[in-house]
Length: 58
Image 1 (cartoon, rainbow, N blue to C red):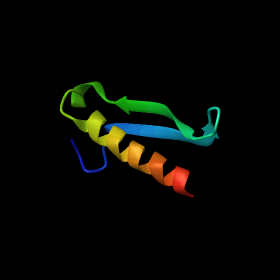
Image 2 (cartoon, helix red, strand yellow):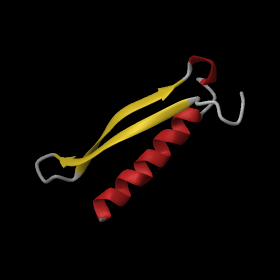
Image 3 (cartoon, rainbow, N blue to C red):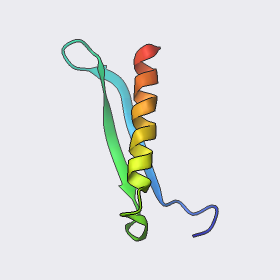
């Protein structure tokens, strides 16, 4: 794995939804096959959850 190799990504739809508009959508979470099962997806998900919380505060 090189320093510039993309091994995963995530996207969040920041448009609030739900009955009280207090949710955002985890739109995509991809990890390349050779980098799965080593915790990268979990790390990305936790970062994404943190970002989603910040969206709700702004």
